[in-house]
Length: 536
Image (cartoon, rainbow, N blue to C red; front, side, top):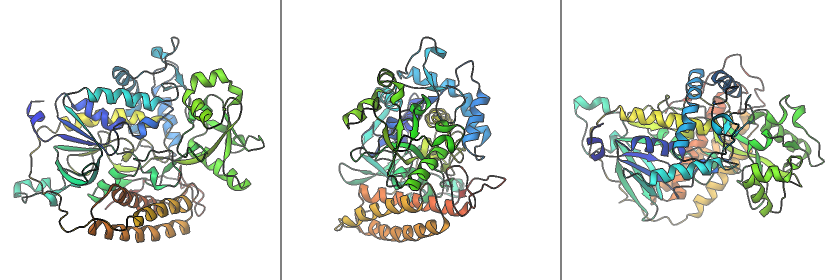
């Protein structure tokens, strides 16, 4: 790369989790990179991940076994070539993170000196981790690297509002530039400190905004998971795929003070079991793999038992693992629960399923390329085909690193991108909002109707009712958007409504049950699986 890349419009990365920071760090030697975080830089889904990252590094393990496990979990919708490509790069991804100073838990007798654990759906121990707070360890390490790089600018409290497209350019394209019609030229972003929308031209834009878990009332996701990247790309004309497959993590802590604290799958991997309040185990009657079945099966089993017995939660019992073991291997869970009055070495943990991961997203290739030139999507907001109808545990962080690094190569291969003058954001015809209670009410209504009508078990009637109400809410929010100055709550609700529509329309179009999508109207799977692809 030439020095021209450093003086041109920067690459803008929207999102400061592992996927976005991987792209930034890989590009920073040759490009100016601006990373936008809509809250603090360390507030991302990455930082909340407990379990770990897949690494096929044990000589007793192999790539084909990892691919087979991914295909099995994905219920016939995984793109096998993508699964194999990402598995092939898993060892490199682990090494890349080690090079970024990630402090993985060590084991002198383990492969490459690492302690590996096994999680649900995996046939081998292949999950590298940092105790039970792997995501935070990774986030802290890569963020520190980004902070120290002179070509990376990190901006907090910037909420990307929409992508800059052909219609936003000052001058019309010349006949020789008509091929640039479906191109991304940057982003409009709301500076949450000043309340003003800033125009940010870019040579390329990378969406790394995470999933849409906040569309549901109960979720393990952080406040940032409002589907921003998916919604922006959809409005800009990109295809979106497999949005009906929302993974509900089986075990989120059920407690009035902690509604989003995840109880890692690794605890079940080490022998914890699920039971009813009377101490009866129930997973063996649902699946031969019991607690180590894939997440969709475990979540549905818990949902079934809760409804069958009229329960608000079930129990996860780890008392037989012993206090010393739990403190050593799960210190975060042990201390957090203890602070809430639950000693997990002496009493079971109350747990409930919660929306956890968006398996679908913006359609991309293995390098994160979308349907718009110069627009890339990586991480949870993208759909590469890796996760199919159900994500295999700990494949998500792996995808962030592998596709993030590939996306950086794809951006570098673009060479110098022609610059265009962009129209500034126009808010001359809007006024300050007078009834913000409308936004709060609509937000609550959306999350409740999605939980009740578009949850773990679905029917067409519920879905149709949800879609009708979503469209009414969209009309209300659009009217608000046109007439009043934008705010964080308004923009996030607008994005969540778009994602809710995509989830419901995708679910209605699938006339079968598969993976994370279970409908009483079509309880069986069709002989051949096809992805759900929606086109604007």
